[in-house]
Image (cartoon, rainbow, N blue to C red; front, side, top):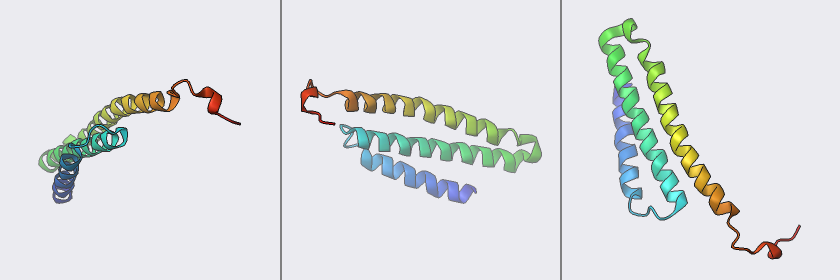
Length: 101
């Protein structure tokens, strides 16, 4: 688990590093945030795996705790991105008369 986690962390950070240059686009920014969330999740998995490796059954609470923290982080950032996407979709520049049903 730890070896695969390290490989996933390197991959996620490399993709985020490539995407950081074009943060003007909502799509690229969302993908960048997704990759950062993946990298943080991988760090959490590595920490949980290390804790379980060191302390065994005494650290069984670490995995659900890390999962909850990752979920909260993703929810907060997804909410911000969704709010911005809805704002873009709802902005019609006063061109309502051009819409047809």
